[in-house]
Amino acid sequence: MAVPKGLKLPLVYNTNAYDSLETLKELDGIIDIYLPDIKYSEDKKAVRYSSAPDYTAVSRQAIKEMFRQTGELMLDADEIAQRGVIVRHLILPENVAGSRASLKWLAREVPPEVTISLMSQYHPTHHARASPR
Image (cartoon, rainbow, N blue to C red; front, top):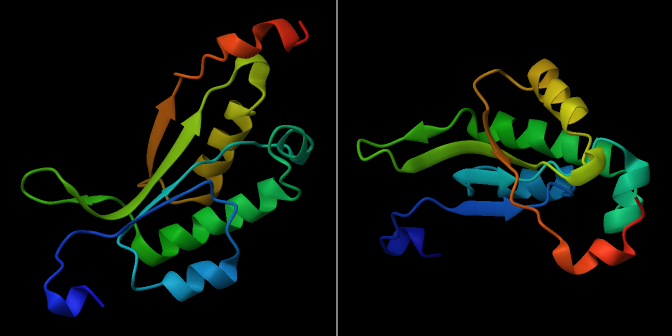
């Protein structure tokens, strides 16, 4: 509703990538920039830490659909993102996220133009005593 009234900002969809293809297809042509997280490469860990069964397959299908819709990241003259996908991945201790497997999957299954943001800021000090070593 805002676009016909002059909204010119890119619309960003910030997501954990646990999205149904049906929902994403409804957003086709509306969302300019997808910002999905790829959290886990193993469903066992996705269930344990996020109560997300089938996370791996669902998130991977979702990311492929997002890229199909918007393609590689496009910047304007001021280097501000206008369209595309930025896949975020948080490196977690003890390989909880399965980073290597997720990055290999991205390299094999998504065009090489996909933008990836690797993050390492997770620091769960408040949970340190409860975490098994």
